[in-house]
Image 1 (spheres, one colour):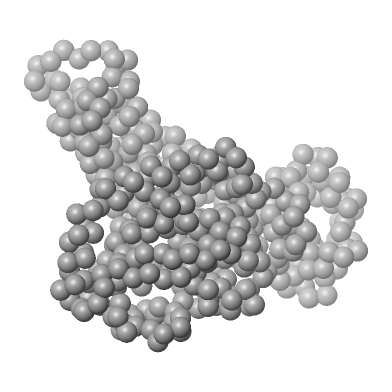
Image 2 (cartoon, one colour):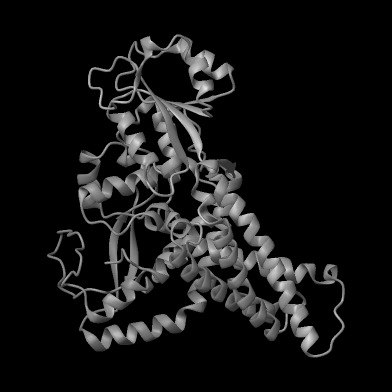
Length: 462
């Protein structure tokens, strides 16, 4: 994997993204050339169109990221990839049409964009057909050796066998575990030199997956492996990188204290985040004001009661605040003072409410909380005080998610469907802790782009 702005990107995805940008620039140039030839215009050198071509490629690339073109499912299924490519290229062209209206010096003619749009889909699909399954083959997968043969090692085995996995386990070494569950593991006593064994397997990384580390760390072996140039990681760090979550089953307080991360409070990044929140919330409220007006009218016509409702939530440093949302449930949805989890096909949700929840329109008024500084656009979702009290008793490290400002969208929202149980809360907490630990403006940008996918395909909305 390549680390960009504190985020790990699989080698295959990075290569495909770079090739896609080249294909998009080729499509833009071919579209311009074909249109010029149709009207008998002499084509100027390509260098004179570089700003327009680069803008075209970058905008469509962002659209591709936002709809999940580089997700595991798109890399595994040609049909899925083609559908997402058509949507992303169309979305990118629409965005560019608006962009070129305000910045005409970066624009093509509309006919150029039409040609470039069709050629882009053909070239991008063709690239994936040409590469076939190469991107998911062993060539781009990292080879790892697991030290351990217990339940933790079994988790790594299952993770490596999942479609789209970026690594393959080439060997297991049993370190005298009492509960050995990996039958193919080689006993440490049967290996004369562990460092040589790792090198012979052509491994690039060794992952420590011991069930009990107390007085069991093979320090001498690990030092020799490290000096051969092979990376050594413990299972918590490895799972964080591979899954984009802080694994609650393997972490301990010392790992959270001494590992890299939790730098969201730095002055420059905090100031940048706040400036973005102010500008984006103002723009959003102005742009969607007509939509909010129509939605408010529809809510009023369907049911009696207020259009908006306030709800107490827990924010930064455990401070309480009120969020404002468009009402999507009946007015008598809850008994006074009693919080209830939302359910799938919840009967309390109105017909208008079901639509605005799918499209996330009910969340838009929270931009007012962002403008006031109580929330951010990106961060863990703020929960109700009653739920927080319960979850802090049942889930370790739950209080740590309140060390960053809550958000309208977040890492958990784009990676995990809507949850309404303790287990769902646990899964989302793992993503929230990852965000708090690995925050960067780049991660915020990635989350905002991926939110488009959640809005277009709202499988998890309730």
